[in-house]
Length: 427
Image (cartoon, rainbow, N blue to C red; front, side):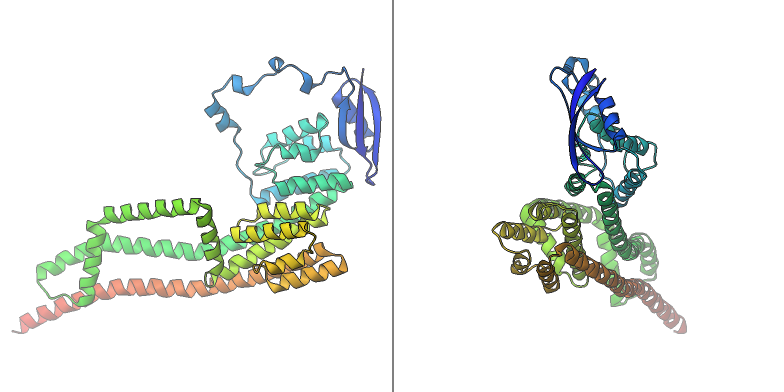
């Protein structure tokens, strides 16, 4: 038998400590869970050997068996989508809500279908918890799967004794973000499809169909209309200098990627996205909603305001908003309220500033930020519909104009040819 000292929480959140005489660490965790407690820390008494204390020579390391390149390929995980994280989180919350101890719930997670989250994620989490680590510490070791936002919220849930409630809030948080992303992507599918089809038709006509018509017109020795001559010149560029066009596109892409790789370039692009006509409004509404939703969720679950601002800054994809968030965090550190530095940044809208100020006066900043997020997400839905309704007719008119130009160029040449033939026959 061995002795293990433990620290755990009751369902009410009360912290309890004690010492157990058990066979090993696994038995100690099982005993804590039978007492209806949530383990926070578990340490072996002096002289007790644990799995972590065993000599490295006794451990079977993958690095000693496989080459590093193959090992990295086999162990690499892709970053899961938000909906996949939401499903995983909801499943874990449901199991814990049903009264399962954490280790048993994680064991059950290995048998549940969690698309995008590999089975070994739950296996590793369970093993870490069985060795006495908290769930947040275990998740922190898998940053590809669990972000800083996720880990800090789980830690706040453990400290407050409300882990199930926090997991449910997180599942709702990620589902809302996934829904916004899906709407954003869906709004761009139709314009992108129409654009690709239009370009493909134009290239096919210019490089394959038009040369055949030009051979016919050349044999007839007719004076071609100006519109047809312009089209022929464009076709000659496509057929004779396609390699130069591809080279130019390749160099332009390389230059763009190089510009995009610099911090200044990334900021310029993010700033440009926010200032674009029509699309810029959609981008800003999405960013403001994301800022408010993330910060609200963190504060609502007990994460300190400075930590919450730091995590929100890391989560946001736009550098203009990142910089404004960083300056807000620095100002809050200096003792200012949240609303004041938000207003001074000149980036966040007045509505957000006013609602946050009201939230500070009433002592409910998370609720105020949640209202901000709901407002901007509703406006985003409307803006996406407006953008789609505006882009569709523009794309249709552009397609019709391009196809009409091609047809008129060919038909006008054919009419000219027919007129010349008719005139020759009358003489």
